[in-house]
Image (cartoon, rainbow, N blue to C red; front, side):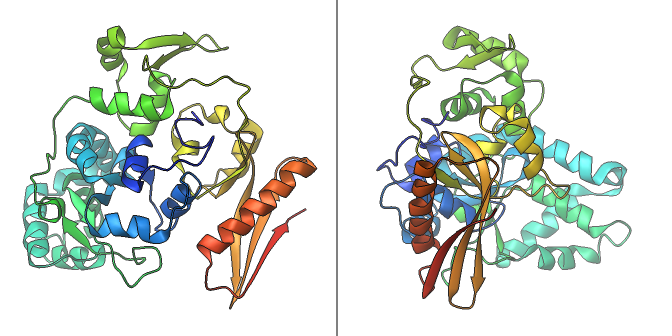
Length: 354
């Protein structure tokens, strides 16, 4: 998985190619995808990603697990339909019984009418819907719209990381100038791309990553074109025949992973990159996933950047005792990361928290 997630060596591919190989980048916050690509690509700059966002070849959209991701436009066109059942489940889990009281087609028509005039924030969308849906929780209506109507977040040049905290949304059809399938389609190709980025993996892993359920019959149909393995717990793992499977002793460099990185979220069984003890340390009731650091391919701590005016400090909180050599490598990598993330800071420092 480290090889497929571009974490054994920084590669020289384009941001679009990298995002496609990674099967998308989690983008709940604006900054993490930039850090995620910096940790994986050689000579990556902030402008490299901003350029393809504004060219509309990479877009920020609601996708796997009903969460925001950066995905290439061509992948979104292929994946949006097969992902709709997962998005529908998200609506049911949040909205529940209220859904029966919502005229969703009418809400979609009203939202389309608003966004055809100009992109708008979800505060503005809720305000637009409030009068016609005063009999229900308008936040539920807006959430249902976000899951069922293909929308794209609009990047802005004036912000440091491409998107403001409350970004405008646009109709995906208009943004991409192509009809976006809102439902239907087989998830087979999506599952192949998942295995390419995260395999070998179980059916349960694929379901956890995508938010889809009942994928066992899909993998059974795909079985003739896949290879299978068995892990130490006798679970069947599926994979692509020609996917890279480096030797287990291949060295893994230290890396700083951003918040919500799919390296952590891409499997039901997360112990392949983080021990159960340490997983509990990054689990929070509000579902936030902190930025983590990798030592020898495993999560060995968390990190955060603290700003005080023009001073920037990258604080490392290890979960384990880190060997001196690795600690030195972490410090060097942290200094490079500060240069990328905080170029305006006149003072930069790295601190290990006891």
